[in-house]
Length: 407
Ligand SMILES: [Zn+2]
Image (cartoon, rainbow, N blue to C red; front, side, top):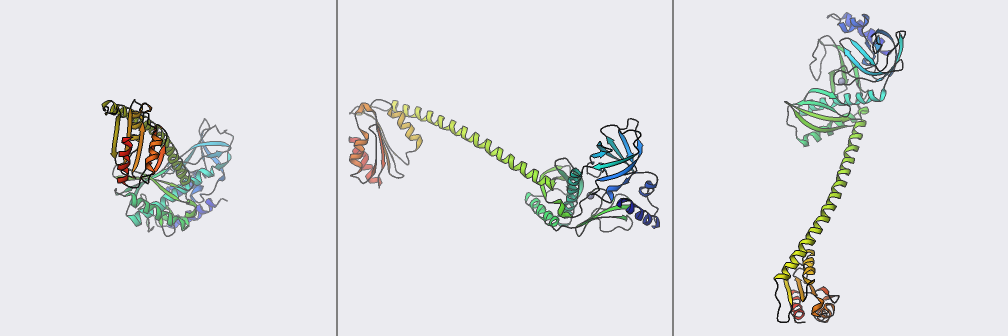
């Protein structure tokens, strides 16, 4: 006999001796309603059962007992097989559990074996138990009440009230729930009567015998869902996005393996985004360089066009500035591409000097530069077209410029 059945009979006896008449839930069993094996053992993956009802096309069946969880209470249905046929949906219709099959079950099949997809169910058990822990911590330590729960294929949500939880508070909540889960608290199921049940997080919305799920020292809730045996099996809980929905705050969360998937996905997303940004940055950097090169060329040519010849026939650009930067150098090159052009640019910052001349002037810049700079205690040199260097003080820099302009 299955563990579930034993539990049922003992409970049935208890219910009958109570002062309030037993509910249809129990009468239902002896009236051929579905015995829900998952109520008593959420780790039961394989079971044998008798077909009690079958639609004409054989796609919709009922069993006397089932380990298949039907969509209810925010938790999605189980998948798996019955008599080797895929189960595509499981419905909760009052006291009946309806199995929808992917292919017809033959009318001759009366005794069948069921097999629940354990990986899918275990994932649901982790999310569901995580939700109990999250809701309990939210209510007891943060004064936030859970008003609804939904478990999706990728993430789950709870709606909490009141609104107005800061991002910092969410991190605190997340940390606290994880601490409680790590205590590896036992999770147990018991059936208690609504008239005598005590210490529930949320008042039950129906009367009679209730299925009470208890996380020792953390939570007591009336719930028909499936849960893990100890909170350690939830693994970890991760809070996700939040969203205001009417008067509630919708809080996304992930438990167990879903945490790893989520974190890995976000990590990959971030990597991808960073790579795209780096690419775009490099492109715009290239564009910026090209544009500033073009601008410097225009500025240099304009400056030359506006210059006039000195008595020696030279058209000079002599200027002291804070710093001779890359942009200025490009302008100088553009200026120097013209006949009779002479450039002496000095930077106060570092006492630097750039000296250049168009070949038409017949000046060997490197040679002239060398002949003076050593004498003034500086260093530097260059080619006949252009030379550069630095001095120790602004005074010697200015003296150097005087000598260069006389060359
Ligand atoms: Zn539950």
